[in-house]
Image (cartoon, rainbow, N blue to C red; front, side, top):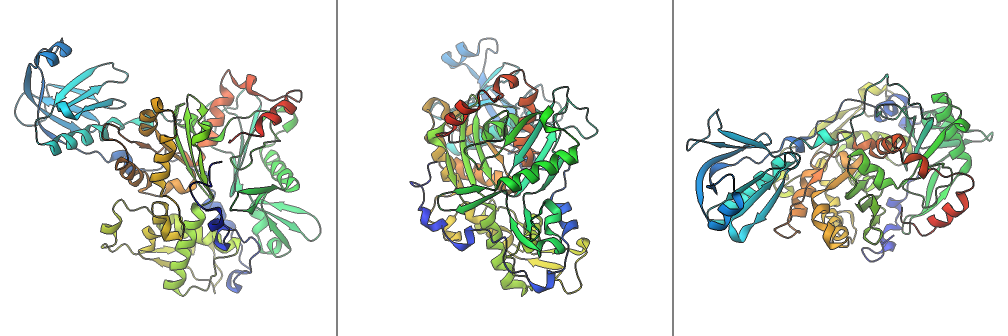
Length: 538
């Protein structure tokens, strides 16, 4: 994976880049059971996230010129026969009026959802190309040039007005099981998702922390129970996949722990895995050995968005930017770096320790869960960092619902760290990293892609991963990328309300497809398949 040219690996070989699973626990929480907190963090909700970006339209109204002959717009354009009409953008639509102002009765309107805006600034033209309705509207903007740019931004902001209608929408339980016996298992760095294929898309039926304790008596306990005080203090905490060197992304797989994780899922779901096709999802390991079907992780994310071409920006414990064209990864353009949510949490931790005189060290796994909850409840990405610093953004986060012990601190007051902690995504020097910002890395990955696909990739940037849930991230990324791309390009960042489970949802769609059986790996195909993965990026 292309890491070395973009950053020095040595800078990632620091203590703050390594998870300390068996760090000494603060005495105040040594006997606390975090079960209620974990249940909250790993709750599977079918309520779609309310995304602020989806309703952030840029509205404009005013006089624009259109061709005189509506039936022959090309001839009118060539002959320069134009007339003025009053236009307005509103709620995903372009409206025009008979009068010289906008009233409640437009004489015509078109939906801008899914349209492409062709910009010819030298001619002062903005051409709206309809998507499903197959129409074309030609608009001429009179000088000055800043009016042209404002109309262009306004039209483009409305083209994504109803894009969520195209995303996969999971159906709330109960959902009827599919006639195909398919078991889906996703092993992440922090979480495990599992479920059986249903007739309609559904969220994971099994979702828990990917952590285990190897007890002194030789037994292994995984998930929530591993972090109960009687278990975590009676053995060694481990992950199914553990990094041995964050600088070079070296990982070791603990097969015994992985087996216990699989058993926990199959027992919870009451399935016999020998009678099921198994989809094993993992973006960390290059060689996937416990599978009967394989799909690339980024491609699955795109399937959750119901597209096959786009730039996947997956932000979890690590950052991956993966351009995909027609379902195929552009391997020479893949960028992956070993930082993300962990650095946001560490930046927040530093500020909390300074401001709250906290009794927590935030080093042990249990205390990191508290830190994660505070981060998820308080942090966001500022659209305008300098302007945000002038605002009063203090917020108090309470832990009272999680049955803390009397000596444990139950409230945290978070100040400007709410937005300064995630700022390192765009300004890595705030995390003491000599690396490019997220927007620059996305731009670089797309520029490394085939030239004919770049415009499409800039218009189709898709977020995934836990850290992508930060409010304001999509807006900021879109704004920052727009400063880097050519003026005739337009960047758009898409956010599905269910992107936290995007790969799992994508796996469900593919398992339901007619191509699924052809992609399954049988025992006979396994040796040649493993050989083909040796040099694979994902």
